[in-house]
Length: 172
Image (spheres, rainbow, N blue to C red):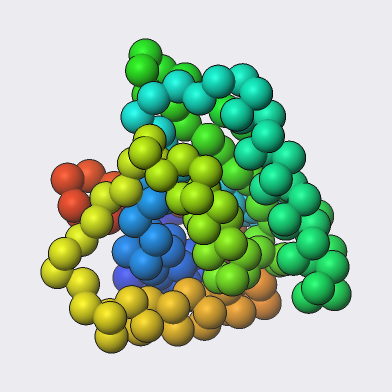
């Protein structure tokens, strides 16, 4: 089993990215980094089951919006996959995106669309202790960590989760 040190840049950048995304965007329930396919899986949770037509419509809206965003940015999205799963009365939407074309602005676009379409059921874990300056700082960290991770080859699977107002990141 490999040993990791706190100053290991590969782990540090990945961990900082996941923490910053979860702190900045309370709508995201969990986030997974898969270095084998260089992707992030963003998981959003809903308190009730959407009708199949609602899911089909929001999936198409998200796909069209991501495509339009990348056309405007003159970039190509390699991986865009959206899936829905249910557990009892809880619904989870997973959005899997490649790390190389994903950006903070695209995440904000996805969240805005989900908030507009599922405002009554999207589970949001607000942290009332965060100030506006903290959110701006997290956005800067996200930009820096995205740039860093895109340059280096990450080798560790990571998962970030929310638990009772805290953000935890684990090496899978």
